[in-house]
Every structure is written in C-alpha cells, then in structure tokens.
Image 1 (tube, rainbow, N blue to C red):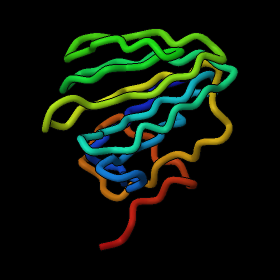
Image 2: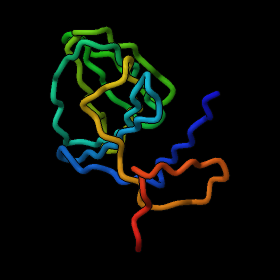
Image 3: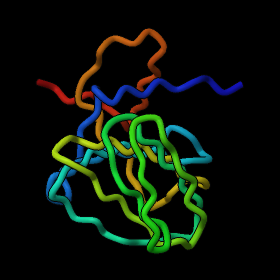
Length: 136
C-alpha cells in the first residue's frame, strides 16, 4: 500500500522566474503535478495552453484569471478548472501577493521537483535519495 507523502512549502526552494514571481513544483504523485506560485504586480502574464487539465486555487490575494480571453475575477477561496487546450494566464490585482496553487492532471513530465533545502522534522517524512537536504 502506498504511503502519504508530506510536502512542506517552507522546506523547498523557490525558482525565481518571471518579474515579481516565484514558483515551486511538487511531483509527489505518479498521477498529478502540483505547482505553488506567488505573483504580484507588475508581473509577466505569459498566456499559454497545454493538452491537460489544470485546477487553479487562489488561497491568498486577488487576480483576474483569463481563460480564452475571458477574465474571471478571483480572490481567496476561489478556484477554476481550466480545460485542456484553453489559453490561460493570471493577472494579479492591486499591490499584494497573489498565491496560485495549481493541480495538473495527468502529471506534467516537463516539471522537476523543487529542491528540498531544510527539514522541519515532520515525523512521517520519507526522504528520497534523490531529494537530499542541503548542508548549511
């Protein structure tokens, strides 16, 4: 039987990418990919599409989430399901950080798990050889 996998955002490195944005990738399942993003204005919007479904949850902040050119106003607690092959992107509102937590199904093979940089002592953490904690 498979065990649950604990993933703590505070233990993993962020990739600094676009202007005023950072991101983490979580490959803890053979079936889906999770992605955690923080963006604030001004930031690049990067309209794009892909051939898999994406569920977008906004736990913090406000944004317009565009799907096929239509803006959907979202704030903390909202989520949207983006169908395959729909062009989409996020546009943060105001001067605050907007957190965007994404679930991709099926698993994205073009994403690499974010590097684990610390261990906060979770009792049920199963440290994989491929995910070593950096020495300080």
